[in-house]
Image 1 (tube, rainbow over the protein chains, first blue to last red):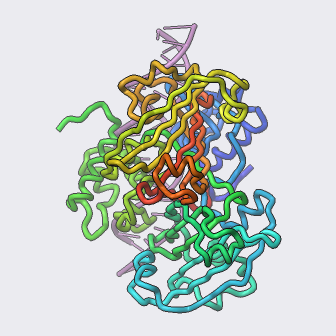
Image 2 (tube, chains in turn yellow, brown, purple, cyan; image 1 turned 180 degrees about the horizontal axis):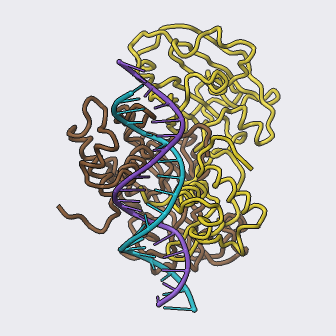
Image 3 (spheres, helix red, strand yellow; image 1 turned 120 degrees about the vertical axis):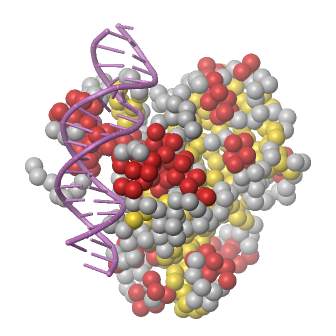
Length: 244
Length: 244
DNA sequence: CAGTGGTCTAGACCACACG
DNA sequence: GTGTGGTCTAGACCACTGA
């Protein structure tokens, strides 16, 4: 079976993964040695190691120096890992939550000094600002603000396709190519205005994510603030011990 | 200068890092090509790539296919990446914060049903519970609770060596070997008791981390709750788009 | 001791960006 | 086309584990 133009290691990764799931590869939790896998898949050991590294990194297998490679203990939970960047809509769908967007407040204006600093653009450069509430049923669950430098997004881009996620919009356009997001995590008490927007009591604790979205070229293409009402979304992160 | 027994790639990583900091390596943000670095450090290109991968992963450099390797845009903030698990003490030291531990409340007792579930042990199995406040100067900045199954930690382990971090204790003992931590992130308003402990107003928003620490064998060796007063620690996470 | 994963090398070819 | 990073190979040696 010939595959696409994917890297060899990627293909091997998927084959090993499939072998683990079907139980053909792992005998009592132990995988064949790297040398044996190398022969079986007819690739170099380096490629096998590349594939196993990916699987180890995503928590599928565990490697023990001088012992062997083993399938990891049963996955702890299914949930929203913060490591991967996905839109709130995609996330909600995954956990079986129906969401829709409230009225969006869209403005083309000059960046404030703070915003310019966060976006690494010149002060007063034009930006597109999008603010909206996300609801499930009639219940507000999040308030999102995106600030995007004008070159990357214009008001006309926000057509029928816009259901609340600037991220999905970028992915759909394929342009700019996205790299990663640097996200600060903090708690914040709702002020009166936020409480009114989210229909909660003033002073209630919210989870606030402050994110800078980088293109693959290293430009900041979006600065966003997200406020989450507790209880609807669960965010977690897998933290690894040591190593560089 | 001869180094320790560290992997070559690790040493090269540090040398490149130092070269970037002093400005000797990067000319106008651009690093030498991999081939040139390979010659300069007298190692194979694979080793150079290994080193650059580490630096890329930790956000120090950006690599552009067909173009070159560049020093990453100036680090937005000094803070703690959540991806890597490190003790609060280590973290504080890194960001130049002096911390010490308040009086620890230590108890050997039976696990509550909730705790037993979180630790995946039998109900009422013996656990060691450690609760304490972390201060900087006289200012409380965090409240930590650790619940550890008795087999992994006993009261006698908490000798002079204990300065507040169960994690560091495990690392120091080298046993059990640690794997990763699964951490839930949520905001929480301080109740009266927490407010008293942390000397803040009742109702103030705290960042709460609820973590299960796994050994390399997949056993849960610690269940912890951490409450952080905003403003002293900054937590962030780098979120990647798509890919495996 | 034998077998495993961890590191490193030298060389090759491919995919991409830019002039 | 030229130069860059991305992938892959074959082989070597080291470090660790467990019988």
